[in-house]
View 1 (tube, rainbow, N blue to C red):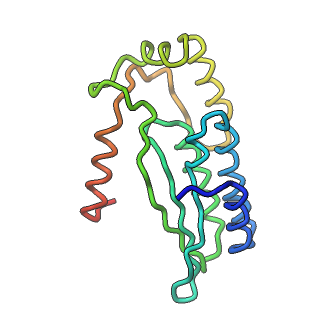
View 2 (view 1 turned 180 degrees about the vertical axis):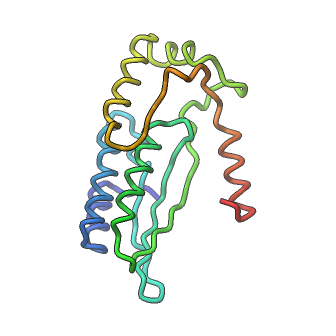
Length: 171
């Protein structure tokens, strides 16, 4: 499903040719370039025009996300704002794919301070990263309260629950 960022931009701009399309791309571009060192983020969003139905353009967005990822939340918020700007003759279909940022996380999760110090080399550096997230998202109407988080969960069961809900038509 992943396509290059250049092709994504061309697809959006050629099929929609609206300010909203440019807004969608710029929000995706933020995520893509913020995480440039991490190659799997380059495939987090794929946008394609999948045709028309009753005169309505269908825009399919493939999203790979984890419940615990702060940048996934930011991207979803920015994407929602961009979609709100679309003309009514565009229907957006979102297809969600699971991504575990921490696939080796114990099933019961673990103490956040311990986990983050191990993952990022030190608790102090982890806090610097959290501060950057808070600063970068001030205009996104999202308030990250890392100071209230004492525990990092394993998200596998959350992904399974979402999958089951979708199978039952509830997601």
